[in-house]
Length: 329
Image 1 (tube, rainbow, N blue to C red):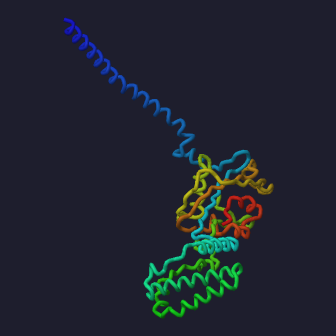
Image 2 (cartoon, rainbow, N blue to C red; image 1 turned 90 degrees about the vertical axis):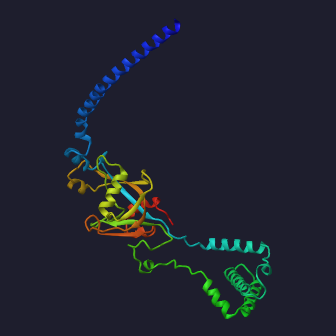
């Protein structure tokens, strides 16, 4: 009797649960429809003031961003990183030469008889290379080595030269590694527009505006309303330098800023006399490929220069403001 009662109670509970579920399923679409309808009806209000699809939003998005009577400007510090290692300083050359000679003096003797057959071409070639290394080391360290060491190395080189045949010399020339010249054609021609110059240095892009004063500077332009610094920098680069450059922005945070006031006569002639100056925020970017395209409207010329060369182009106060953001190498 108790089992029959439990079965009836369980069936009654299942029926009540199914009824409640069906009622919720029938009610839920109505609630969802009401919520969707209210969201849709409330959407047009912010669209008129915030979204750039309406005409009023387009007008507001083209306005310059002005904060505390300062026009906000985004600048681009576009750099080409060094492609080869830089030249060593005289001190570095002497240090590495000293370390090399010290390591050679304390190294264990090389067992040439174990690796080379006596009288073979390989043995004679190794002796030639060894003599060349000794001659180079003695010549480079002539200031720090005595005359006795230089004479002994010279005598060893002459003795090896007597044993080397013409066949060995030809084989040595064929196996010798040929290094490319560190000085390119762009360096010889002083082509400041080329990215193939100053391979061991960091080059920075500067552009020339069609004006007399402060003509050379980094690519820069005003930030618009509803635009962040990276978006403004990318837009200005595309407008001034074209879209033929493969760039990568290092980050979304500026690496520095430069603030200056407009001349009083410029403010008086301006349509917006409330703007007293400008604040430029510089964003860092690297170029991987491509080149600048001059449109003769926004810019009339450009150059890829090092930090030291930039002094000859930009204004002194501009260089003092940006020099700490640039690399010395």
